[in-house]
Length: 141
Length: 111
Image (cartoon, rainbow over the protein chains, first blue to last red):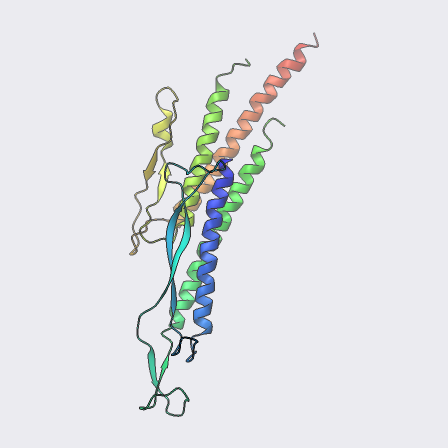
């Protein structure tokens, strides 16, 4: 049933946006982390969205530009670390500077708000499709 | 009466409305996908002529964001709501048709 596909498409939006919230939260949580497994301070992660073609219930690819979304990759932000003069810090270099993660807390907060707004938009679209499906079941009653 | 010509028309309109819901759902899902162009189905163009409604997907001309994406969330949510209401209206109309038909069948036997 094609309305179910509409729901699946919005669900792909929910998944992608939730992933974005997760990454942003990880960035915020690690905004002061100076030690990581790879060595050096935490590097800010960013998400890349890509359109995903959808299949109908019979498994054939949908024609006519019906596209959902998926996370194509998670990339590291190459911008330089924030260097602060803290000679007493155990991770300070010989000049007394400590490299802190390149996480901008303000930008992450804005990103979180934007992601949650997009998430809600998908939720309301799903709500409308749900009402449509419920009506379909009433045909002929 | 059973060969009511409205039934095939309603059938096609319902399919078109649910197809449009998919397209609009895709727009909302791709709200933050760089370079994505919002899509829609043109109903007016399909309703002319002999009601032969093939689906035609068009691109929506809304203002582009810096990342090349032109999905306007307010427009999409309004269109989704309108499309949902249209669907409900069609189902209501179809039900009314069926009710009339049913009345004709049952009342006819009570002469």
